Image (cartoon, rainbow, N blue to C red):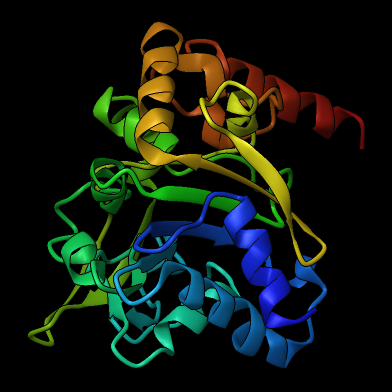
Length: 276
């Protein structure tokens, strides 16, 4: 694929000059050569959004069970476990990374600092999404529409409704974090966003939802403001709307508003043990 073709595919999905583009992607699904990921795909993104545009991506780090104390120290230079896209954005001169110890985000462009500054451990894990919503950025899921479905505004809506703070897994995981003053301490977030397997249930409901391809990877895009309003409205009426149907999913079971979740979880484990 050439640069111009990718640019046209991005435009057909709603990306425009000056946009704040929030992107989650499985880059391998595009079927581009490794070198083309930067020289073709990222270059196409930057060409389309232009000098006044911004790209924001997740740049999370690995968390560990809280009973493990001898774990690596993470800081602003720790590689992300959120995929190659985060590494690619962070490698750009002038890129920005938020300071949240577990759920950092990376950004590049005109509004990256505005969106990511202040995102520390006292803030919601998906706090930067509020800026993306307020700026009515374009959110895109690329190459993982089914494998890792949905948009990160769902996590923000869950936080704002008090749902992710009822997730008991927040007590089970932590990181060992070094701050900007080289102080090392253990940290666990104020919430646990958790399982997103059913976020795709919102597909088809979003106003202005667009579908297409970039390379050979399927993509879905929506405007953040419309998406957040829809998601928050539905979740306020039905908090269980995004719970997955797998009784073995501890993330969905260990939520205060999923009253039968833990009973079903342990029952599934008991059945699995007897079947051995």
